[in-house]
Amino acid sequence: MNVTLAVKQYISKMIENSGPGMKVLLMDKETTSIVSVVYTQSEILQKEVYLFERIDSQNRDSMKHLKAICFLRPTKENVQHLIQELRRPKYSVYFIYFSNVISKSEIKSLAEADEQEVVAEVQEFYGDFIAVNPHLFSLNLQGVSRRRTDQALSGRYHFPGRTWEPTMLSRCTQGLTSVLLALKKCPMIRYQLSSDMAKNLAENVKRIITKEYELFDFRKTEVPPLLLILDRSDDAITPLLNQWTYQAMVHELLGLNNNRIDLSRVPGISKDLREVVLSAENDEFYANNLYLNFGEIGTNIKNLMEDFQKKKPKGQQKLESIADMKAFVDNYPQFKKMSGTVSKHVTVVGELSRLVSERQLMEVSEVEQELACQNDHSSAQQNVRRLLQNPRVSELDAVRLVMLYALRYERHSSSILPSLMEELSRRGVSERYRRMVQSVVEYGGKRIRGSDLITPTDAVAITKQFFKGLKGVENVYTQHQPLLHDTLDQLIKGRLKDSQFPYLGASSLRDRPQDIMVFVIGGATYEEALTVFNLNRNTPGIRIVLGGSAIHNTKSFLEEVMLASSHSGDRAQGSGRHSTRR
Image 1 (cartoon, rainbow, N blue to C red):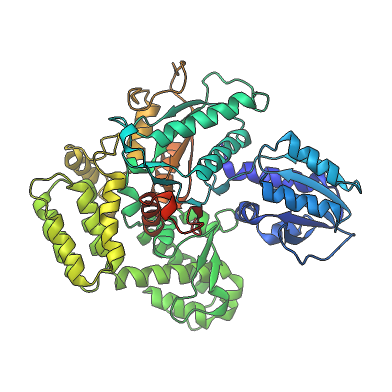
Image 2 (cartoon, one colour):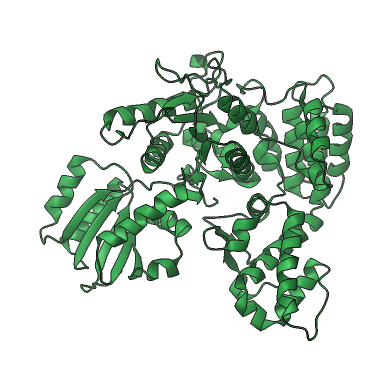
């Protein structure tokens, strides 16, 4: 169950099928992202693919000496672009691969357009998703839901407020069935009962499996695989927290977009580091440090650089701080040339370090963790108020603290939420941000949640865990476990309640599941990916893959919430769109 490997194998097979000779890879906007996340340009160049083009580009030259490998989503627009292309072919021969199921009528239209008989092959290769990590995939969608207008139809246990943005339901169905086909799984399906959206998606996926039963006719396993469909609104706390492991922290503070980070705003950044790629497939340091905490990463970079220094006895200097490391890298062009990877990570960690200090994130994060994990209202209100009065705390961090307080103490008899909202106003926090506090409670508050996100035993459970793993101060910042951890733990032990997570259809699993695919409507997070990574590593015989309509940091999650709180007609055109963040 490795989504990265599945997509890589599809792309390798496409290139192999076209045989020897120079090739062009013809893609659309989405398949460009799908390919670029698993393969570097230099890797594909080694396979005789010398040109990368977009099918919708108007000014492509005719190059009859090249073979064309087309990897496209099966959309009406792409089929039209292909029809135009085949009527006036620019390349000698075409190998066409769709990332999902394509209708017979569209195949017929393509055959009719191929008057010059340049098409050698048309196939479906099911890579219709972004393989972020081996156990994590995304559909890069933002704004999958909208405000519901038929409030009266909502039952007691169903969302009062949200329903699918229609195009997004279709895209999530396609993406999810594509993952199942890529992993060769025909699963039983469970969904979150408190979410109408989860039920809709489960039914749509089941409909495709039934309709395309020949495609899903895989070798039966002793225990059938399981697809679990969840809704982000069941845990709105996780995407609001600052993060302290490398991949999650980079996404939270700098933003990861298809493995790319924009560092152009970093003070004094060199030209070649304005945009960097972080890919565990091609960067050993990143792969080894993906899930380590900030303190460990700093130590590991320092060790790497000190190893190199040992080879340079002259002018050796001590590396006591991030600033020393940056100075060292700048002063040794040879080092920079040999270890572009290290200079990249020193820059990234240096910028993370600057932001942590500038925004006082250690202090902010400690209070966030207290709000998320503990049950001491008196202490929480004092700490939130104190930080709101600190001018060095950023607008985003101030608002996130109030959101966490609002979710945590939503129905507390002594809630000071109105007073905290006034404090935000006094700070000059924009009205848009202040409105988001109420939107987050509407999105993931108590009346919406199907699971017990906040329980009275939290403080006791966390205290036990805290003392069990007390190895240094960083534990204060990583007390929180996403709700997904408990859900999966219950599922693996065979204790997940059917009354909260029913099976679709009459049958149910008698044995504990082994292959589990989880999909989060409204987006997953890197903290949840870490949970899945740890469960895979520590639970023999269990294989879990996590996916989401997006992979959120706080900013993209708040955008998701704001889009969900608008009516479809209120949206700016195209605001239900492909996410610019991964």
